[in-house]
Image 1 (cartoon, rainbow, N blue to C red):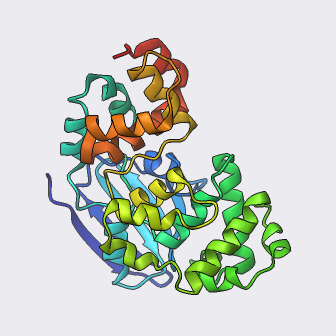
Image 2 (cartoon, rainbow, N blue to C red):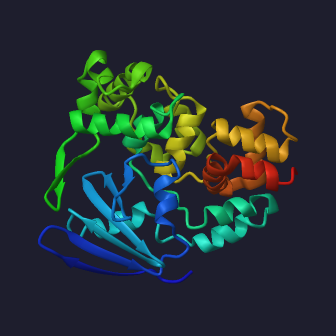
Image 3 (cartoon, rainbow, N blue to C red):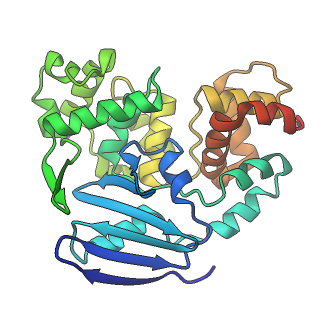
Length: 304
């Protein structure tokens, strides 16, 4: 793995951080692949996101990632960790390509990373994902942040943090539905109340086994196996988690089961046996490729 180097400089309105030697890395794939919902492409080709209390403008040129943020020097490690820049993804992609059926997905999504997100925001984001589209999830989260988050500034522009459990727990169902979250509103409020009251301690999930953490998460209304696995994978780095949504179910059935419909439990058992601790990486590459190129998959992939 090539060592990632960095340079930073404090300007009048932002801290500028430059990470060099980050390949394989694709800011576009990372921002567009559906694991985080607060990244949006800017007119200048970069991406704008809000991560915790940080507003981040990110730009990529070849193996260099340039970031502007409102944070102090402590944000350097936060951003490095968030983008998982310390992990050797070249090695991961080589391991995934040992499965011939995954090679087209890995090539298409090369440079993807599993982001290290905050458990609370990840939990609510994927409760919102039930029977929902990515554009609609993003709009709802943005409304939620604007209505109930804290304003933060970068280069004279105001953005909003994701609201805390305590704030959402204090809302009525009609107030939360003003964000157009629909039937999911009652689940969001109940999740917020459980977290705010300490009935669910998201920080302690880190100390549990994957299965223990999964079962605890599934005590929350609106959290089934898929949502729990998304929280495990995208915020707790449990790379053995394999979230199964309609796209993953479709492609796994097509690739490995001759196109016949199989229960989700069978897919989960299969992924665990075939991919082990690479399962979460497989899920991310397959998900983005399948959602983007389903017709191409049907034309190119040979069923196993």
